[in-house]
Image (cartoon, rainbow, N blue to C red; front, top):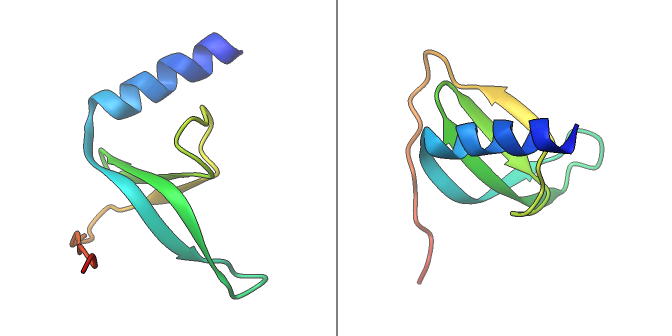
Length: 73
């Protein structure tokens, strides 16, 4: 099982167009939480931290335009 998750994560990373921190507002608590995100193919994969093998959330980005915004400084 772990090997399969490692292979899937490597495939996601091999096809990524973005990787970094993403803030997501949670439905139940209505609070913002920082996630590690990867955009690969038509999906945004959210992980609780950078080292996790299985995504916490998978969001379809089909027919959308994503804009990367750097809010540093």
